[in-house]
Length: 290
Image 1 (cartoon, rainbow, N blue to C red):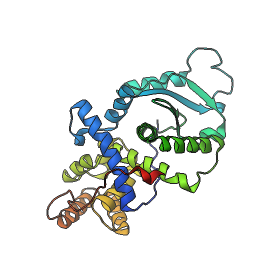
Image 2 (cartoon, rainbow, N blue to C red):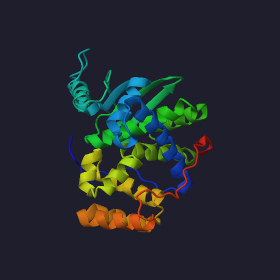
Image 3 (tube, rainbow, N blue to C red):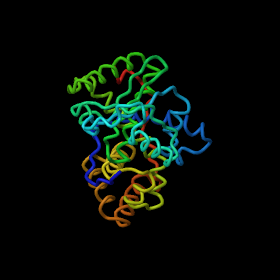
Image 4 (cartoon, rainbow, N blue to C red):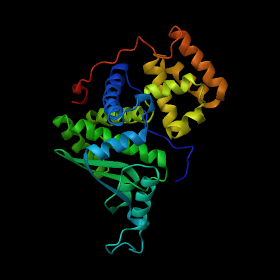
């Protein structure tokens, strides 16, 4: 899969309370993953999170593609398609416990607008991921996004109903109603936190990792890491949004000089610590989604 530097990940600036509540959900997941593998949260990566879910949850996994990818009906028989085999081989190569059971061909309108879809029925989940996404970090982000839906759906029946409404909008290509946007925004926040968790990100900053070194460490795209750093500086370090944005660009564009400068600002504002002791992470209140 190609590395597209122009890749754009969804970003919506939210208030601190909204961010902290979704960050707390991500922390709940990270604690479970940390305990499952007996490793500190700072060492948890997307591979651990994904494998935890596919080992511990009942998830039926499939992929889909634009049906124009098979113009000659090559896969009409029962034999698995080349893309189904290649997807499963890719997951095995990346040491992830995901195996797609089937490849579905869908209309172009659906494949062009939907990255992933999860249908939840009680404790069983059917996840479909768009394998037309020709970019591995985006594929991982999409899987993490859908896993956050699964995690919340198991503990909240009302959330389950709202996800069903989102799926209906996706299926018909309709824009999400305003009341459903917090669901997708929250899933994006959680996925970002699972991709590069706060403790791991702070370890990277303490070690003066450049932007490109952080990308390699987490396996993220430029766009996803940019948004993750922006959220971290705004919500974990309480930098004003415009200032956090400027600092993020310094980290992104100025190599060692950039990360050392921003690290110095963080240490100065926190009395010599990377962690900001004054941020308040509220307990998860699921009424945010209702």
